[in-house]
Image 1 (cartoon, helix red, strand yellow):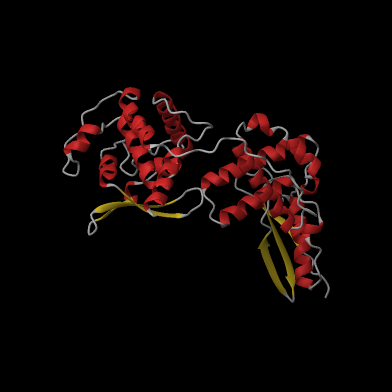
Image 2 (cartoon, helix red, strand yellow):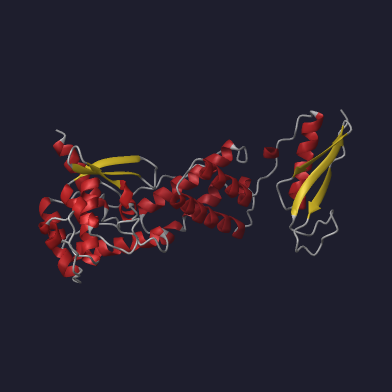
Length: 353
């Protein structure tokens, strides 16, 4: 079958200075394709703003309408920037959380900048030698070996995507990174008590709590509507629910469900990092402390809803590190909040024996 004549043309935006020239190659307006076959005219979007990319779309379309075996675009070098954009779109289709997407975007942008500085612009140039040189910079950028492990895992994920897309002949082998940080350990009963006792001294502002039918006098006396009260409620929540600090800080008030028939409260949510469903009962006293946490936003217990989530989480992490230090509790590494999760996990295992 004779190939129809496919024409690239431009539909200019209202403010484009090249309006009137539908074959202009210099503007950034959207490109389209048109052709006539069997006496009928067809039009379709090229799906791009680049004339060069539109030429590729034109060749692919010619192969389709004539039934020729197309030359796969995978036979051509793939720009690293284009590969990253497709990879991120694939992650969005997988419903990966915004936080994980941001990490992929940040780290792959660093990879692209490093590669381009070395004169490498296509995926095929991501050799083992180049990646070894790239990883040599991580010691300064990512002081934590645990973080280096996670960054490497995300890099491997991207490289595997490129291999599956046939832009790489093979996935370069990367040497494993040994995590040399001391793993977090659960708190002893005494350490946990010391942590709670250190709160009023570390965060000493006191504010009057209005009366509420839901709050017992005992709870009212021990919780304050201020920074100290929020820290105490957060610690209690993480200790008795096993939530990661990000999930706890951004926990919505609608995630605390009262099981009226059974006489207790349950936290029902999903982990932001993995999407894993969470449903765990918590003591009534902890729920009562959550009720008196006020932050100016009726939707969340701790987060004000303004600014980025990660900024709010970072502030609470700083508070916890300050509290651990004030309580005289030694914790290696950065993730002191994990000790609360470990305490919950160990307690769960012991009670299930």
